[in-house]
Image 1: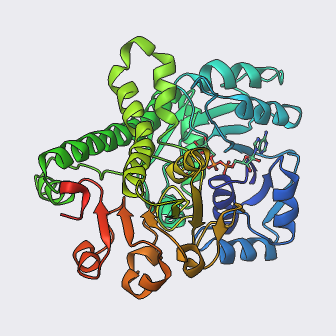
Image 2 (image 1 turned 120 degrees about the horizontal axis):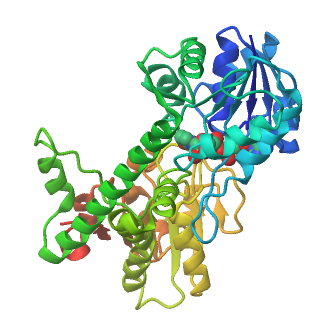
Length: 422
Ligand SMILES: NC(=O)c1ccc[n+]([C@@H]2O[C@H](COP(=O)([O-])OP(=O)(O)OC[C@H]3O[C@@H](n4cnc5c(N)ncnc54)[C@H](O)[C@@H]3O)[C@@H](O)[C@H]2O)c1
C-alpha cells in the first residue's frame, strides 16, 4: 500500500516515518523546499526523541521518500497547519491547498484522511466538496475520514502507538478502512464515529485543558492575594479522586491549546462565554509575568533580564505561541535589555546566548519560563557571582526557593505568598 503524507512537520514527519517503519511505501510531501532539501540531506528540522534513528532507517530501506509535490497513492493523509487569523478565525487555507494539490492524482478507491485539527463540519463542508471536483463520487469512489492527532511532543512515538485514536468517517466504509490502516501500529483502542464528532472531540480535549489551566491561573492569583501556596494547595486538591487541576503558568503556548478553542468560539460565538474567558485569562498571563518582572527591577538602572526557556513547554524545541516570546517582545518594546537562553531551541534571536553562563552574566533578574530538565537540575547558587543583582522569578515552581533565599537571592515563586517563595 502506498501512502502520501502531506505536511512534514511535528505531526506529519513522525507519522510518515512510523507508517514506513511498518511496511508501507510512504511519500512525504511538503511545500517548503528547505524542509525537503534538508530531509534529502538527512537534516531534521524538528527535534523529537527517537526520530533521527527511525528516519535514517526508513530512508536507508527506501520505504520513505520525500518531495515537494504529491503523486498517485492509495491513501492520502493531510497533516498541514491550521492556525488562526489575526481576528481569531480558523485559517483553513493550508488544508484547502493541500487537498487541491492531490485532486489531479486521485484514483477510484483512494482513502483521504485529514489529521489536522479543524472546526467541526470542515470534513463534510469543505473537504468533501473539494474532493468531488475530481469527478469521483465521494463516499463511494473516494473514502474520507478525520482522525485527529493527540500525541504529546517529546513522547510522540510512544503516544502514536499507545494512545487511543478517534476515527470519524463520512460513512462506515471510510471508518473501517481508516481503522485498518492505523492498526498497522496503533496498540490503543481505535474508536469509530462520524467526522464532525471526531472534529469536536479534538476541540473538546484542548478546550478542556485551556479552561482547566485558566482556572489554575485564576486560583494562583487568588492564592497570592490570600497568602496561600497554590502549588501545595493544588497537589492536595488533586488527591481527590475526581479532581485533576492543571498547573498555573506564564501562559499557554504551542500549536494547539491557544488556537483550537477559537474554532469553537468562531462556530458558536453566542454560546462560548466560558471558553472565551479562559482564552482571555491565559492570554493575559504573560502580561502578569511582565508586571512581576517590572516591579522586581523597578529600582535598578538599565536592568538586564534573563529569560530562561523559549519553547512553550519543557524538553521540546517548539516555540510556536510561546509565552516567552510575548514577554520578550513586550519587554524589548518597553526598552529593557534582555538575554535569552534555551538549551533546545535553535532559532536565532539577536539576544540569545548558547551558554547559560553568558546569559546570566550581568543579569539583574533571571526568569524561569520553561521547565526544561536542565533548569530543574540547576544549582543557581554556583552561578551567583555572574549575577549583577540576585533576583529570580520562577514561573514553573522548579527551583528550591528556600535554598536560594538562604544564599542571598530574592526569589519569587508565582502563586505563593508575598511572591517570595513562601
Ligand atoms: N504539533 C502538535 O503537537 C500537534 C498535536 C496534535 C495536533 N496537531 C495538529 O496537526 C496539524 C499539523 O501540525 P504540525 O505541528 O505538524 O504543523 P507544522 O507547522 O509543524 O508542519 C506542517 C507542515 O505542513 C507543510 N505544508 C503547508 N501546506 C502544505 C501543503 N499544501 N502541502 C504539503 N505540505 C504543506 C508546512 O510547510 C509544514 O512543514 C495542525 O492542524 C495541528 O493543530 C499538532
